[in-house]
Length: 327
Image (cartoon, rainbow, N blue to C red; front, side):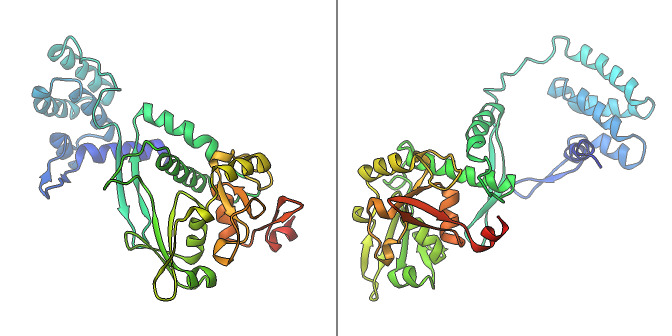
């Protein structure tokens, strides 16, 4: 069926089917008389649409009676005739029409339902009102553009863009504090795990990351890594000596001009400072060991066979062998 037909059926379910409330109690259907008539084969889905339109246009105190009357009429008249009869009922009960609503002040425009998965990820669905939706579109559009040699789907690009927007909000300085602290992530990982890439890293809420995820997280100064030695003694707790400070960030911005990956147009403030030789492997936090990369290319370097090295003071990216052969 077409998307329009599917949407219409979904609307019929909303009108005709009972529900279970958050307290566990059943909620009757919005159009009980129409439900019974349709179940008996006495009216069609088109009739239901006209009944709903009329019921929604009359004062709420008359809705139940109007629904019963319209259902009775639907047994005798076709949908076109029925809507005309409904207009007469509306004119009689509500001659001045409904008060227009300003959609900007209607409650409940925005909803977000989240489900936490076993691996620590989140899934769910959301709905934004027209005003907030226009802002989100404007934010997503430049961040979700495909990169060179980008095999992500539109859905994946938009998901990565949303993750970046969340990062921008957390870094803005305007995010609300909880427990006296601004949003941050604390990652606890042994130095051996970082170096051998075998094992797991633990977040401060007891969830886990893979070693490669921890290595990528450790590149970004807005994260607080806690690195443990053999006796679980803290060796490093987000010390600035291994993070790119403002001076280095400025130098990187001038040298790389944004994400240094070929063809990427991300600006410096949208990029992470990546250690070419990871600090856990003895790599220094210096200009010739750092490169600006956007979150997408940062993940490629840490989680795929992409690599980067310095050549005459400039970063050079090398794609995986299979991609070189394909080119």
